[in-house]
Length: 88
Image (tube, rainbow, N blue to C red; front, side):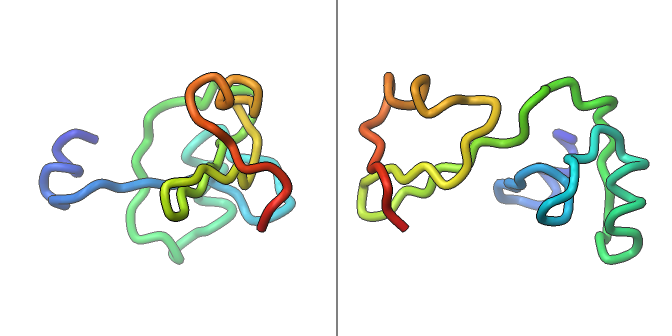
């Protein structure tokens, strides 16, 4: 993974590997079953152990908007950032 990031030259970010409404993939094989050749490369980091999916926070003009609660709860996030509630 470190070599891939170094070769790519910039950060790579992603949320859970699953189509909207489907269970998050926990293995590279499950991700491949979802996306097949539509994804150019798969990195196998082993079995994903987290029970919850990704937490997604959008930063707009210096303000944090929780877009999807996941492994990190809104309450935990609120301890480190001032979350904007109920906006889109």
